[in-house]
Image 1: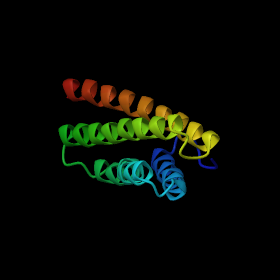
Image 2: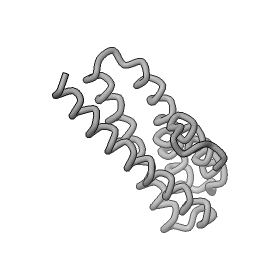
Image 3: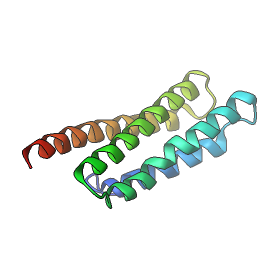
Image 4: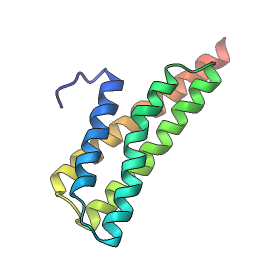
Length: 122
């Protein structure tokens, strides 16, 4: 990945592109199509929702949008695990996507905790 680790928006966009590459390579079977549909939605939405979070109307709205992003990332992680275990796509690329997804989950968990603490301080 060529983007800076601290640029979250870019990391989310890169993650969406990685997910789109995996989705395009999944087999045209019932399970491949099902996972592809789920993964394209859950894997691309964090980048889009992050844009919404940046324009949140309040701190509570921001926290809510960040939680939606976290939920979608966790859903993506499960789909990637299924893809890995069923060997539906290149193992190395799926493992790399899982690693990035885990890192993003950790970032958003911490960001939500920080936002909640800041919300109490006012």
